[in-house]
Image: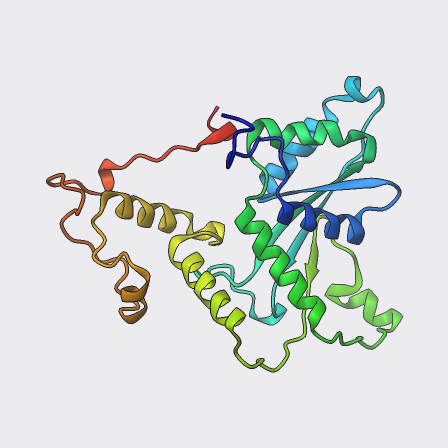
Length: 254
């Protein structure tokens, strides 16, 4: 099936992912280095080990660097426990340009690269940041640098801060974005990792057909009742969420 119409090869890089890679490369990669993104720190560390364990392929040791990019509309409003999750965690791996073929093998054969949903969310937050005016902070004194928390650079930690701007006038595009956000928040496209068990339970209930409210228009009017359950609509007696088993797909299932 690979290569057929409407079927993407596992070696294919989606447009939104490529755009995000270009931004990360421009912002953090220097000296001919390249970048790739991972959804979690664990996956990023596994990718780094994969690259470093293949010096024979590259005929020389490979140096890599990890960057944790926390993208938030407002740094003061970060809520990692929030189900809605308005922020995005992105883990970037920087490596020499001639190591790209090896780095590509990591996500190509494991299926653990970032999803198109996460790439879209990161791009939207980053592009929104570029639209807003930047506030140049006052230059801190040497003494302030010495004793303040921000006076040193943390390894594996980079945060994107944005200055909030007045709410713009609603447009057709905004309405579309609101619908997208609603769907993501309800169906778990970009939920934080802390909500993993919640998302899995909601998905199992939906597959079992026991959710009483499973349509967007109706659920907009019955906010807070989305998780109420009842008899299954699948035509199977006494089926429940415990009868649903979910497994990864694609290369990550191998």
